[in-house]
Length: 251
Ligand code: 13P
Image 1 (tube, rainbow, N blue to C red):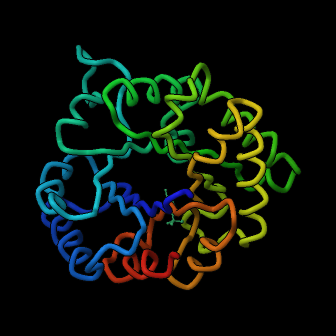
Image 2: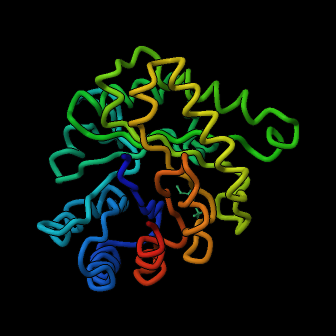
């Protein structure tokens, strides 16, 4: 049985004081755990402050990226060990915004992934097609390319902590959610691909999140699909009440 995982990707929103206020609010709204794993992913500069607020709660902390080198003259970069030292448990890797604006490729996703695993961070690896690719009937080709390219040389053992996030780019920040059937179709495709790449046990144990305009109103329907194991939430994770409602609507 896969435990559902709902993560909030705060992207480049919230300064330190705002981040602390948001997670304090979330703590209050959530109350006792409901069996769903909860993760918040603030910008790097707020990780340490947010870590203090979530310590001892069931809310886990994640970063939004990391660099693959361990240390050195890499101005502006943050290593996996530095992320880990803040108390973070997860790290988002290969988000479509990084692929789109910062030159991220499958090869660099793979390097970051291995760096994350090396320091014991649990990677949330993002994949998904853009609108032109979907309309051109290329969804499965693109998703297959992202998955096979990003997970090169990974062992079954390493797959144990890895989470995949299927985020169709056309659904991100657009208010245009994939229907539960559209999402389920791709999630099933990913799981079948994992069977071929690894084995049945690994595929069945791997959690696959959906991301793209997830809101309290559509969360329950999406999360009820057999191969959807949680959500990676952007906009709706920036308010304690809406993020908590998504978590509460997840069974
Ligand atoms: P929205 O929920 O704002 O569409 O963002 C999704 C996303 O990109 C999460 O990583």
